[in-house]
Each structure stands twice: as structure tokens, then as C-alpha cells.
Image: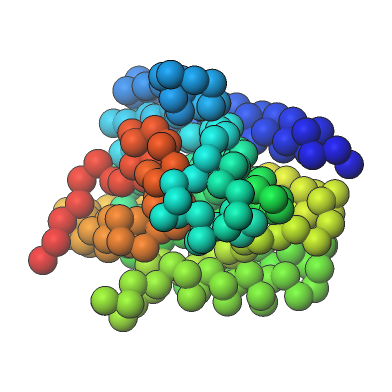
Length: 275
């Protein structure tokens, strides 16, 4: 398949998924909330693509949720080339993707994160994943979450779940705290063996995330919580912030390739605490 066709169908899918996820979010929220939509360009001087990020804050369900779509191209800075697959000799790149981060008002509902992306240098590949970060332990929810991910992965390859769960556990880890960020999920990168099969898997990851977050929210949106629960949530958000600013590859990639700063840092919670 021609590379330009691959770029078109992947970026179109990410944009459609943004619309679908946003529709579910606003349908769950229903009541008045602060909504901000920003269309941005990577460069003011030349055409290097851009994207759109949508943020909903101060809702009855969401303290803050961001849904970001991007489609950009350009050249990597020289000091960054060596870290990117296929970019060592040629700095040109094209990338598109969607990322979603949810911080909940009710501390009984976990924070949730999802992203999928397609990147082209002299090679082209998919990456992404889903992970969940609870403030309050819930073993039943954890079991159901991983069961859903395994079922989806097994439909594509029986080895995917074990492999991508391990990758997620190792990636979403705070070495300076010696603790995981949350209860894991799946994480994958450099997926480039078979475009059609890989793209089908990436689409299923997005659809599964939409199913998971809506189910978790509906199950817990009316659960009672206390000030003590909220304090635990603020502390956990502090850990979340530490990971995203210190270790997250997506954050580093976006900042080092001239992405929209507000869109990149939409993953940060509105309020967090450290003790």
C-alpha cells in the first residue's frame, strides 16, 4: 500500500475517533462545563500540519479531560534524530495520533489515559496503549479492566496481551519512587510488521478504550466519596504529574518537535498535592 494512502487512512481514523470519544464524554457530562477547543499549527512560517485539542473542565464528572488530535510533519532537531527509529540519517518525519487523558471529580473513579499514533521516518510504525491510575484500590475493577484488554488482544494474537502488559508495567513506573503509576494496561511501540493487521489492532485499541472508560464511569459516577478520598486523589495526581514531566516519551516527543505546548501538557491534572 502506498505510504501516502497509509497516512491518509490513519489520520482520518484518529480524527474520527476524537469525534466519537468527545461525543461520549459530552454525553456523560450533560450539564454545563467549561469547554475549550483549540485548532493549532505547528509552524507559523510554513505548512507543517497541526491539530486540534479539546479540553473540558469543572464538570460534574470530569475535573479535567483532554482529547488531542494531531497530524504534523517536518524535521527532527539534530540532537533528537538518533533517538528516533529511521531518523538517524534523514531528519524528516510525519506523525499523526490521538491522545486522551481523564482526571475525574469523583476520586472513586480512576484517572484514565489512552493514545495511539502512526509515525513515518525512513520507516513507519504504530505505537500507543491504554492505562488506568486509581486513587482508591478496587481489585474487582482491576480484574475486569485487564480481562477486557486480554480479550481484545487475543483476537489479534495470543501473545499480545502478555507482551504489551509487561511493556506497560515497565514503562509506567516511577523509578525514583520505586512504585508503578497505576494498575497498568497495555503499551506497544515500533509496531511495523504488517500495516493492515497492525492498523486493525490499533483501531480495536481505540474502540476498546471508549468501551472501558464509559463502563467504568457509569459504574462509579454516583458513588459517595469523602474529603479523605479527595486528598488521596490529589497525592496520586502528584505522582501522575511527576511521571509525565520526567519520563513520558510522548511529552518529550511533542516538546522536542515543536508541538503545541498547551495540547502536550493537557495531561496534567488541574490540582495536585505533594507531601
